[in-house]
Length: 216
Image (cartoon, rainbow, N blue to C red; front, side, top):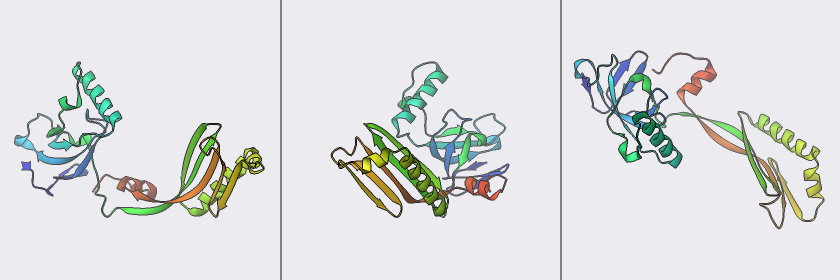
């Protein structure tokens, strides 16, 4: 059987694959980390391989991050025992086994939840740091902000800055910032709460609700 009409589906064990469906290559494939889409599915006597599983043809997107390109080139160079560049690696009509790919749900219709990020950005004599901690509820985020800021005041650094005319301090309901007026990048401390939308995938929803089972 050959399936290649966009939208047509094929069920294998507890997974459903569809022509045109976006997918992700997992760690069981040499194309690990790439995104793409299913273009064709072949079973039984129409398969090109001798695998017991169906042949799922995938076309992968060209990676855009230089680090991803380098990793892919190094992986295939090691696999073939000779240098391989991106243009030497097949990304179209790659035959994959079902266990090598993870079907991706479309963005449209995904549930979102508002979360709260406690963000800290600081610099001390030119050394920089950045921290973000996500909280599911606003009171938890405000509690985190209060604890972090109290710790900084206990360390006395901010108290010294506040008593120094070279520094300025501003604050709001969910933020505090203190910085050197003449050289912000050299010395500053900024903590604030930022509201964000968390896009929840099916696996995450199953995890937080305690549900089990594969994709339907």
